[in-house]
Length: 188
Image 1 (cartoon, rainbow, N blue to C red):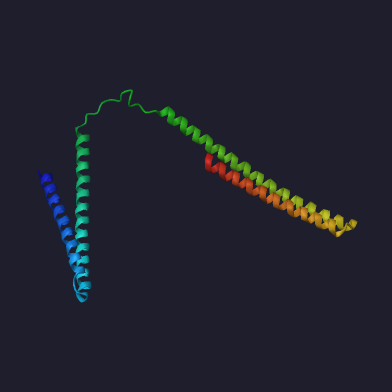
Image 2 (image 1 turned 90 degrees about the horizontal axis):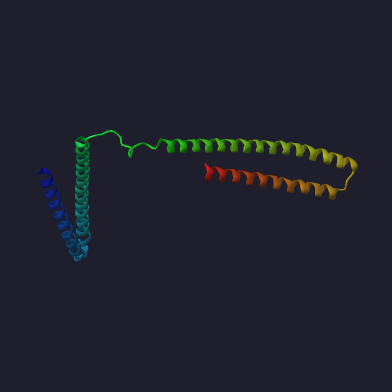
């Protein structure tokens, strides 16, 4: 009754809006044929009318969308109220075992990631300790070498080697960080 009347009215409104748009397109063609001094004003008025009609079209679409949503909700409510509920059959039983197994697997993976992060952190601390030890050893070697009177070229070779070792250490640390990131990213 009421819904059909509303739908007929909506269809009629839609048809009239489409008809207005067709007339506006013809008006736009006519406005472009106006003399130059009146053309801009006529075009502006046609654009304003198009804008207003577009707002009407959008308002109608919003109204239709709200009506469709309301009708769907009413149908779903009626369906729920008219449904008779029965006890659960074997087909509707919940698969709890699979969910628990998945949850356990996720916890194990999480724990493994924590262990991996902890070992990565301890490796990084070990590298820091080795660096400070190597620095101290390097300084002592330089002192001993100076006392023994080694030539400057040998000293430069030692320093160059220390610089190379430093770059190797930094590269190894970066590689370890990238590896840890990839493990977390793809296994986490």
